[in-house]
Image (tube, rainbow, N blue to C red; front, side, top):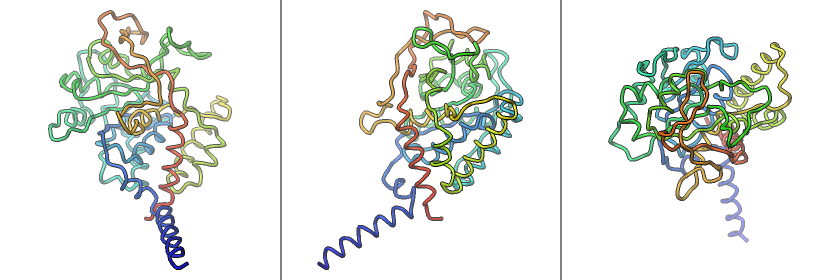
Length: 340
């Protein structure tokens, strides 16, 4: 009887410790197997802040830096500058107590005007420095949820990085042989339009290994407002902060008379799914589907054209949204119970 009681007590203590210690136990179980540089316009659409938080809570990736990139001037009712995006990134890092361990870089808050003229910055140099390291065997992923200014500039300044990175990009319109555009679509896709010249560098001339998540695919990760209220709000300081940025976004959209219903597209979170959530053996995003296509050429209007000399790229078709969202909710829950 005593042995049964002791067994129960040990089990209960273990469970209690797990609940109290939050992400610490997960971090102890998981070893990083890739490096990641996050490059996102964190001062605009708030989905980027969800992606940032999700990546920072994922122990299988070693975050080597966060690039707070620019977007359109007054994009999403904000300044659109890199400095403003950095402020928003640091709010997340401080909640996670990572502000002193993960650097946040800025760019020049301008887009390229010529495919041969890079825009150098601390962000660009950070990409080059990390890509050219020789003291680690961990693969490097540069994940971009906005414009391609920084990675294109890094490539122009040091073309050798093409052999050392995988670029995962959220952006680009639909491929007409795969999907039709959504109702009321714009020909120029939002992220591509931030810097068309940079996109031309990446697609038309570079040989960087590219995984593309085009518009028809990044529109798939949808969270309902009911889920936001029950699975994000109230989940500690981080959950309340993320809920707050969404509430502010909803307020703006209502003010602009843009009714969006009761769901929101979290189109940047696939950056986490395709890196941190890769399969255990033969690592790859095995629960999401893609096709291998010849890279198109992007013209000055930001539209695809046939490129008979284009390299082969990976274009995603369907995402594992169950894994994407449930992993996010679970990590948020774990962090909310973590001891200070």
